[in-house]
Amino acid sequence: KEEADKLAQQQAERKAKEEADKLAQQEAERKAKEEADKLAQQQAERKAKEEANKLAQQQAERKAKEEADKANKEKLAQEQRIEAEEKAKKEAEEKRLAAQQIGSKRKRKEELEKIEEEKQTKIAYQRKQINNELAEKIAMEVRANLEKEKQEKEAEELRKKQEAQEKRKQEDIAKAAKQKEKEEIAEERNQVREKNEAKYNFLIAKADHNLNNLKKYETSIEYYNEALTYKKGDVYAKKQIEKAKKLMSPSKKENIKKENIKKENIKKEYQQGITEELIENGSKKILQRTVVSDTEQNVYRKVMHHWGGVFYFKNNTPITLDDWEKETEPKEDENPKEK
Image (cartoon, rainbow, N blue to C red; front, side, top):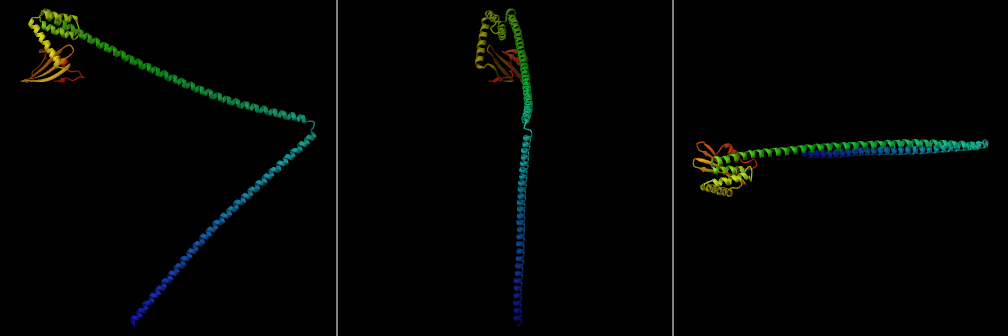
């Protein structure tokens, strides 16, 4: 029985709960429907109000337009009435005047013609005044343009004049520089010529001394040949060489012949210019420079001993360090060739 009562109670509670839930759901649906109806009603009222406002505005605009049209019509009617009244008044006045002043018609015509003439005169004067002002304005513009063109022309002429002056100045500078360069070259050539002449005279004097006083014919020939390097084709030096050769003994002539052959071999063996070679010779080193030109060949030797001694030779003849450097040092734009 207790279990039955308990089961009955549970069923009753479940049924009560279901009914309560159903009731709550119905209440929520009813509340939601009321809110939806209220919202729909508010939207309908707002829409109706907007339409009413729009209709009222349209009616007001239409009414205002009608009133404006009415006012315009009334204004036009009034203007027409006034115009008709003035026309009628004018016609009445003209009739009255015509009736009263028939005799003064011609006079009135003349007055009107005079007035018209004065009017035309005034118009002509005004036109003339306008034309004069326009002509003056055009003249001022023409003068301004002419003045501008004049200034531009003067500026252009000034620019051309300045450019011409600058060009002449540059040409004068270039001409002066060129003249100075020519003078420097001439001076340099003159100095070289004087130096060569002095060297030639010095070598000729030494050659003549060896030929005439010391009777060293071979040495004199060497000096004459060296003198020929400073004055190519010199007749005197060539004549003296032939004279020395005639005075030399047969053995000396043979030595010169051998020396010439040796020089020819050197010329064949070595290229024109400076050829440098280093020779190891026991306790000494020899730096040999062979100098070959169009007219002569010379062999220079710098002999360096292991004990520190250094000696210089030209064709086996002792020379100084200055002679070695002056005659064998290559120029700035050339390097000695190695053999």
